[in-house]
Length: 322
Image (tube, rainbow, N blue to C red; front, side, top):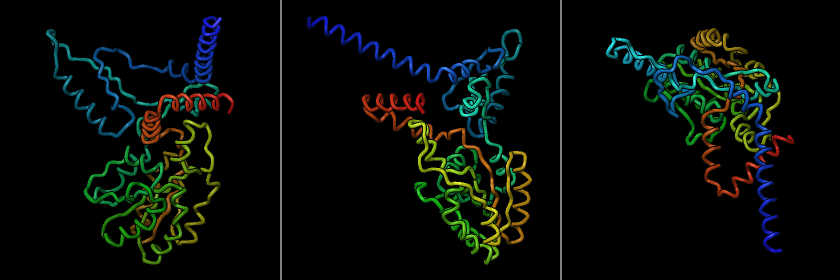
């Protein structure tokens, strides 16, 4: 009787595990199917694969160019050049947009963010960049090259929201002959934005690029992955043109990537005349930053196995039940 009870208990435990895995596969069946149908590069001859070769800085494109030139010089016994197929992430699936179509359409996010391409191309190497604390901080770290020593100012340990607005004023006072601009999230900007009135009074031509998405995105992303919800992160509707009017700054709104270069050129023109500028960049943070993904994975691996199983079970349950 005891052996029968033990066997029954083991069978029930195995059935529970199988049901759990079935629920996990069912919950992610749609996204998995979409990702399975991703297009691949054609004509595979030589595969170069690296975990660190993917959605990252433009330096990777330069490395590919040099590699291509090297392979062009490499010939086989018949004089034919080598061909190359790369295991490179040129784009990543846009999960939220795919889910919004109930997995009937495929959407992707490109290798780099064109907002940073335009910003880097338009600003001279000697410009001073001041970065606040938030999601934009890690996007800047991933996508924005700094080409001169003492050209980047950030808060210690990235733990001071609202830092960029007054810090940019100080940087301009200390470097009156250098262009100074700030990259700041909308949540951090609301904490100290009225300090811009000091920049206006002192005639300081500063540019504030405000990444505007309506929530505390770094926190929201970290909550959304394990919990499928984002409590206490929404900021509400904010009209930053009112901030510009109140502080005497110029206001520019950018709602699409195609508008970025023109807005940057106009902002630099106004700032050159000694007036601060607020550039309101409407952003979509549906793509998680490398920092968010890395932090979640690292912390998850630190937990004991029982804690990890509990977290996975809870995450699956919330994705199924909402």
